Figure 1 (cartoon, rainbow, N blue to C red):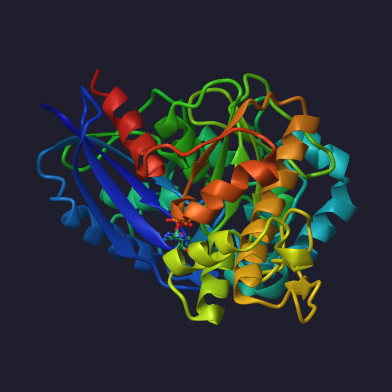
Figure 2: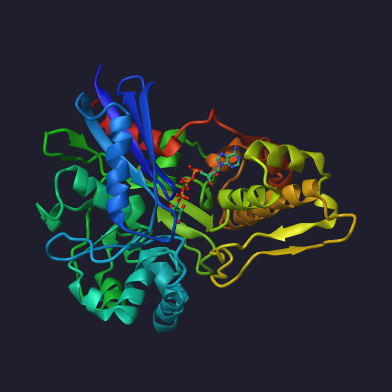
Length: 428
Ligand SMILES: Nc1ncnc2c1ncn2[C@@H]1O[C@H](COP(=O)(O)OP(=O)(O)O)[C@@H](O)[C@H]1O
Ligand SMILES: O=C(CO)[C@@H](O)[C@H](O)COP(=O)(O)O
């Protein structure tokens, strides 16, 4: 029975699944936590990956592996393969001004046409421009630019400061499409944009086709991996009409499309998927952590928060939470903060606050559904995944807010499963 291993190196943690490569049955699992913060030393992810793999019984009997991970984070490497500074994550908004500068220089329409994206602070290109302007000495040292899953793949294959072969960095279409300097229509990097952002050229990971592979130091087959949203689509085997709503640290709304989606308003990101097609996606910065924050405020567990929310009536008697705790990406309001409105003596109850948190968080995702629909993406039903989907209140309230049937697949690590499925396909 050959085994395949898949990884989800996500914002809050690293999850590993080991599956039977023939049947897909999960044989072993492991996990480890990541530190908080929007700027993180990638060494933490590397240690968490090693812990999570050990927790899942190790690699000794594994024949193939692949890594899925949080998208967009900037891992800047020097010529010796050393990480130059803490990685700036997808939810770090310090590069909002750099996004505005790039739009002013090139125009939103041109950037959307060349890359499928209109820059917001999340995308890698804006982090490079921020680095050039805010830390020119660090920018000058950049010899290669990787993303979290690219860098972890490189490390686990046996590369790093001790063996710094930068040309061995590899990635896949889905994660390349989140950089802001890759063209989903041609499948090529747009080096002029990279240079405009960073100030000079650099090594970029080779973009492997979905069925291509490389090897690790022990000769195992290694898949190209994927951004976490594309890996989830693989793990769920989403069909046309399915729209995936993930409630993790980020809230995402995405669907597999056979054609690229180009939205010059920037609401829908025109990503590629991990199987040769496309993955139009809308992302919010405020999702599961909205529930974490309000549960903390009310000093209740997630289960108790859910019970409270279901005690309140639909609409929470007019109490509304606009949950922009971390600023927001869609709509593009990087400096916003959360607001609670509709407070009266009658509406200010614990159940109403719990309900307003769930409804406010889901409303942001509902706007994402509208944006995909406006791009002509067929939406028949929602597949609800991510940590927040474990909340019974979220499951009950989501169909009301979305106006669509909502299916909640059996709780599982769909990103890691998608990566494992990619790895398993290398053995067939
Ligand atoms: N039962 C639950 N109800 C609501 N939120 C939950 C529940 N269980 C976990 N979460 C939240 O889900 C988030 C983790 O989800 P996950 O999809 O793993 O995130 P990420 O992929 O961004 O690391 C955490 O913020 C956690 O508090
Ligand atoms: O920025 C995006 C998608 O564009 C996020 O979806 C990240 O990929 C992080 O995902 P999680 O760790 O929250 O699942």
